[in-house]
Amino acid sequence: MTMLDVQNLSVEYKIQGGVLRAVDGVSFTLKRAESLGIVGESGCGKSTIAKALLQLLPKNGKISGGHVFFDGDDLVGKSAEEIRKMRQKRIALVSQSAMNSLNPVHTVGKQIIEAIRCHSRMSVKEAYARAVEVFSMVGLEEKRLRSFPHQLSGGMKQRAIIAMALSLEPDIIIADEPTTALDVVVQGRILQRIQKIHKEISSSMIFITHDISVVSEVCETIMVMYGGRVMEIADTDSFFRAPYHPYSLGLQNAFPSITEIGQEELVSIPGSPPNLSEPQEGCRFHVRCPFATETCRTEEPPLEKVRDDHYSACWYNDKVESFRREAGKRDT
Ligand code: ATP
Ligand code: MG
Image (cartoon, rainbow, N blue to C red; front, side, top):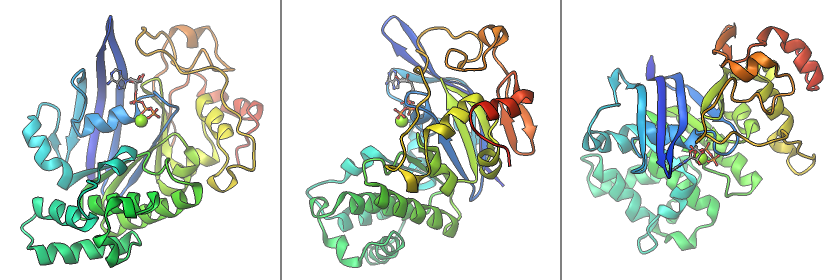
């Protein structure tokens, strides 16, 4: 069953001297209990998608086109009040900055119980039991409910935030770089937990990160973004076996698997992402693409099916074998 159907979503920010199109015609769907990873370098529009889905865009941002069907209802056009009501209970956001959103003057237990009661008719006792349950899901002991935020380590605080989001059994969990402030080992553990839990409570999951190795371990589907557009969207296995887009080939070379971090030199893609406040011509990636031709400089490639559950927006999808060889990747 489709939980979320995003069609042609565009988001713009008003900036000095014009507009910046941060998300440009993005479409994807998310089934119940499916997990989707959104990856791409800094500034490609990942967080903007999350904020647009939750209607949490800042004042200068607006959805300038498209639809977001959630459980069949179009969220675009709903009032802020309607969205607020459904937001936390049905779509939960776990972000890096959420770590600082815990109130320092109350115990985490008090905060989680209040959050639960705010969205349900549970008594304090029932809410407490629920808090204990979600705490144990994320591997926190009951006694931690009596801790103040400053008494918890970064990893524990992050798990408390995740527990709070899970306590409402949301239909969709959006995790926007939830673990980047934490060390690699803690990150890995937390990710495994989130993955297990979203299956247990059959929530769908959107995982946002700039590190594709994380997605390979956590998500069934991967969406690669560049300059506000989708470059490739695919079943994760298919993607890691045989990526199609030259940008994806570059990303795969740029990130070793999570277990190898620190042991291998990272090769980054030469150049930097486009300035989105300027009009774009051709393929967004052409300036940095080692395989770009005149066509790429002038015409924007559509997202095309290359295999079952695998789409890539490149004029030269059929030349991918030679691209992979040159990029040092093999199709197995
Ligand atoms: P990161 O990996 O660094 O979190 P991201 O992929 O989440 O990046 P976004 O934060 O969605 O990227 O930003 C997309 C584009 O929109 C960037 O060019 C950014 O500068 C711009 N942008 C984001 N927020 C605003 C804002 N409030 N006003 C103007 N421009 C913004
Ligand atoms: Mg972001």
